[in-house]
Length: 267
Image 1 (cartoon, rainbow, N blue to C red):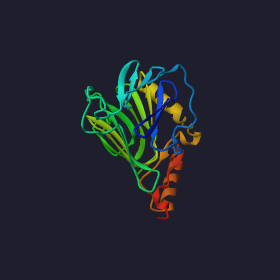
Image 2 (cartoon, one colour; image 1 turned 120 degrees about the vertical axis):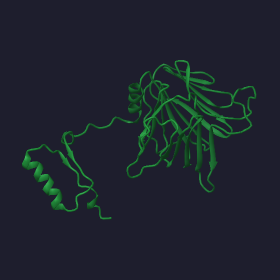
Image 3 (cartoon, rainbow, N blue to C red; image 1 turned 45 degrees about the vertical axis):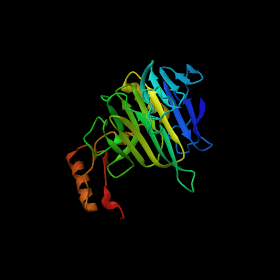
Image 4 (cartoon, rainbow, N blue to C red; image 1 turned 90 degrees about the horizontal axis):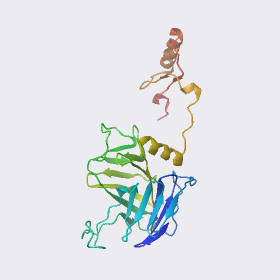
């Protein structure tokens, strides 16, 4: 399902059961070579009307202003955020003139500074996921997250909501995610395309399974890695590491892997 709004090409594609992929760009091609979503997965029971796409229990509706609303079995769970005067009778009509999908061109390139905005439909919504961050917040509602890989930080831009949906921000750019009480935003300082994936499900398990199906199944851990791993901050010398390994052997303690940490790095 393709449509064009204010110079932006937008495409909605059924992408696995109860899921839809959203792509948008001011460029002619809606191509994302760095995508985590590869071959289009099978789906069934897809219906498309003039302004809506239905895939299983997920409904995606396009308003006359081009704003997307997602529902699970008829109940709205996720919605793009836009504040303008396209329809002054709407409760969200505003003179702010801010759009759900904002592309600011980077001069001399085909890239743009992208900001995607989404409604916070429920102030009590709980957000889980996004990888591993050095913080104590299990519920990410209210958090401001750096989308970048760092030492002791693994950023995986996929989250599950207590409202019964999951979202993958399918963009490898360094960026930012803010789960505000009033507004959720994703930002990429340099990209050519907006690309995100929405899925709905009855349980977190169902949503995670759908996410795994479209991004790839993890390989089984090899047999040698299923036992005990010995690791510490560092070994100062090779003799120190070997002494630990020999002590395990002397005591008859099973040891599958011993980790030689960063003192082996040349820098």
